[in-house]
Picture 1 (cartoon, rainbow, N blue to C red):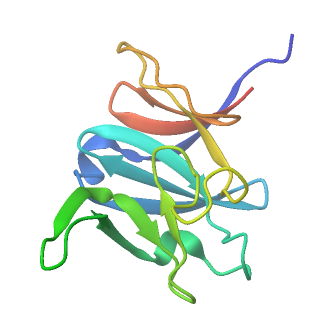
Picture 2 (picture 1 turned 180 degrees about the horizontal axis):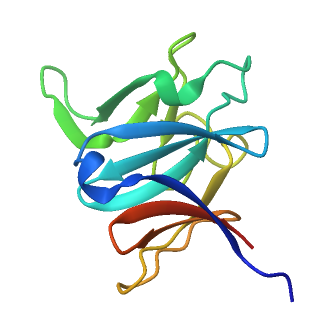
Length: 136
């Protein structure tokens, strides 16, 4: 069994709700986001044209509604690419326009001493008050 390796990211207090930090680990640029106190990690690479996705706008989205009605939802959960405005769900990495075929790589997020949060491959965790990305 491969031993886990951690990489210090920042203190939890340095990543308040609605903020992100972008780090490079083993040649991969990864954005770590705090969405309402939950941590999510995404590859900082838009699958469309290779933009630094995690530098895009964090926003919400409109749901379909009647003419003249606006149903704004999921504020702080949607990441919009800075180049061509493709939108992705921060929590799952799936695109908003075609969630079954287009997505950005996302990584496991783990806070030690709390309930585990599963997403995919790398792990971001909290050890005392230091945030780390763990390779499994």
